[in-house]
Structure formats: structure tokens, C-alpha cells
Length: 257
Image 1: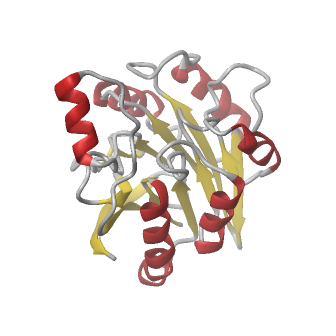
Image 2 (image 1 turned 45 degrees about the vertical axis):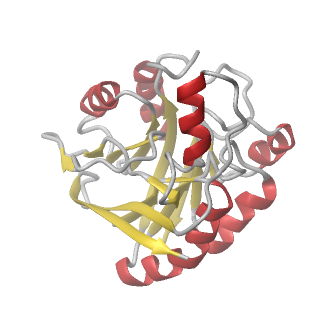
């Protein structure tokens, strides 16, 4: 079984890049399932129903979110009613949305889980213990976890904690693709961060002059998504019959107009 996972989609440039490139990526790599992190799809913060549907129409089978999942109030009902969207499962009880997205295609099936880290991320329940519960609840031998977190140490620790119990742990949130993709000793594929789908000439997707000014002055600024050519960052993960990973490969397409 083959999984294609695209990193955080940032604003309109990121959505446009996904719409342009995802059909070619799917034709080239022939994934059984395609998953996209879209928690920054709406001008860099959150998601809306229209934007979620754009990404599904482009070819996504499931969408994962993150710390900006509920930035837009009008998305609450959409997230609640769309079974193909996995919101962070370590949010308080009663939070709307699916904790586990279950995908099937022919003889293949996959459970998709989204969790947020806690270092520099805010108030979330323990993702390690949440993973114990969700892995048992999923009752599947092929599970992918999108671990949306800031610290590489937390991401690596988490991946090793669930090693052998899930097929893959893909890191999101930092928008910078890391070069540490590997298969852990017990068979779980891991990368600290998949990267982003968004403007190349930017500071993690945002207008660089605004961000520089923020650092120089420490004054409040309204962050805006950058313009110009975009990039698409992704990974391809191959999973064997036993549910353990047999391959993980980084993808980085740049210069997308």
C-alpha cells in the first residue's frame, strides 16, 4: 500500500499549488491514499468549508488539521460533519470533528489520526496517552499519525513511543521539510516535518518583510501570506502487508506558478 502525504497548505498560493500539482503527483506515484494537512489553508490560519472542498476536489482522500483547526467559527459545522477530516484528537472532550478517519480502497484500508504536540503549542491533552487510546480504538494494522508539533525532540520521542504500533508518523507545523526521513527499528516510517505547500520566497509562507519588521520592532503585525512562485512538499510512504513501513521518500517541487 502506498500513501501520499502533503505538508501544510498555506493560503491561496498553497491551495493553487496543490490544485496544480496533485494530479501529476498521483499519476507519477500512484498512491492508494492521499492525505493533505490543510490547517493553514485559509489565509494562513485555519480552514473553511469552501477551501476544504477545493482540496478534496483536487484529489485528497483525507484532510488533517492542527493548532489553527478552529480559527474560523464558520468551519465548526463543516469539520463536525465531514468524516474525511481528522481534527487534533487530543483536544478536550466535546470538540467537534472526527478523531479517526477511516479510508478504504479495494483491499486496502488506513486509519488516519491527527495529534498536536505540547511544547510551544498551547494547552493540549497528552498526545502520548491519547495515542495509546486511539491506536486501540482504531483496531487497524495500518495507521498514519499526523503529529502537528513544534519541537523536533517531541516529534522524535513520540514517533519512537509508537514505533511498531503504527505504519507512519509524519510531522507537520514548522513548514520546513526535514532531511531525517527513515524507518524506525520496529517498522514505523518517520519524518520530523513534511514541509509546506505554499509560497517559496517567504518566512514559512508569510510575507517576509512583515515578519522581519515584527522581529525588529516587537510591535503587533497582521501576518499576510506571501505571493510569488510556490512549492509543494510531500512524502511517499510504502507499507507492507503486516502494516510496517518498507519505504519513505521526500518530495519537493518548487517554482510552481
